[in-house]
Length: 346
Image 1 (tube, rainbow, N blue to C red):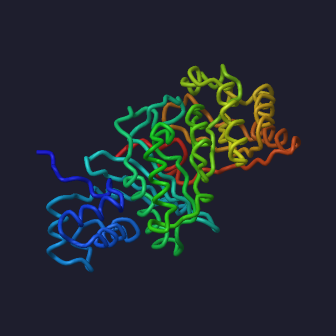
Image 2 (image 1 turned 180 degrees about the horizontal axis):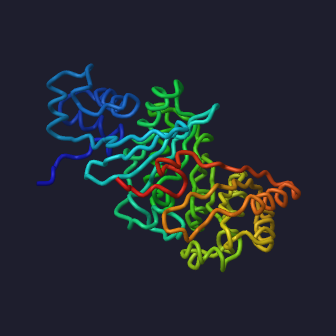
Image 3 (image 1 turned 180 degrees about the vertical axis):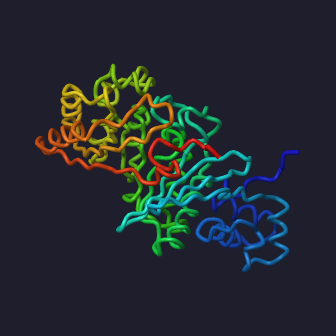
C-alpha cells in the first residue's frame, strides 16, 4: 500500500515552521529540521540528534525522506566514478564523478530516461519514465561531493547537467535543485560553477534568459546544417536551427553569458568542409566557445569517431577565425561512464 506520508523535502522552510506551530511546538524547530535535511544531508529523522525523541516521532508519523541510494559504484582506471542511483520508487539513474588534476566535476541526471531521440545517445533508447524531483537531483550532487572528498581529497568544484535526460524538459525541478545547491542553506556552490546542457529547446532557453539564471548554458549542437542535425537528432525538425539561433541571440542579449557548443565529429556524417563552414557561420551569431567531444560508441557501430585529420580541420578553421575551441577526451569509457553512454545497463 502506498504511504500517505508526505515527502518532507517537498516543503519550504516556511511550511516546516508552520507545521511545527500548528503542532503546538516552536516555529524555530522548522529551521533545525530544514538544516538537517539540506545542509547536513540527513537520511533519517533518527539522525537529527539536537531534536527531542518525541519531536522525531512526530516527524516519523507524518513524513518520509525520499533520499536516493547509491546502488552500485564503479571506478574507472582513470579515476572516474559512475553511480547507479536508486530512487525511492525503485527506478535507477546514473551520475558520474569526473576528476582532473585541478577539479572534480559532477555529471548529474535530470530525468529517468529521456524524452528526446538523439540517435547517437544510449540514454535516448530508454523511454522517459519520469522527471527527477529537486531533492533527487540535489542528492546526486551530495553523493558525488562525498566521493570527491573520500577518493580525491577535495570537495566537488563543478556540476554539469549532462547526465540522463533533457534538463529543460524538467525545467522547474532543475531550477529548484540549483537554488538548493547554490543556497548557503544547501551546498553554497557558486552558480558560475554549474552548466546546464540542452539539446536545444528554444522556448525554454528564452525562459531561462527571462528568469535571469546565473549558471552557464551549453548546447549539444553536433551540426549547424538542418538536414544533418535532423538525421542525428530527429527532434530538430520541430526545433530547427533558425529557432535555436534566435533563442541563443535572445539568451546572450539578456544575460551577456557566453554559450558553449558541445560538438561530436563523426565519420561520414559531419566531417566535410561544408559542415565546418556551417559551424563557423553559426558560431558568429553570439559569443561562444566550442568543445569538440570524443565519441563513445554505443554498440551498434552506426556512428564512428571521425579521423584525427577531420578533428584537426575543425580546430584549424575555428582557431583561424578567433573562436575558442577545446578537445574533450572522454573519461570513464571502460565503465560506460563517458558522454552519451549512460543507459542503466545494470
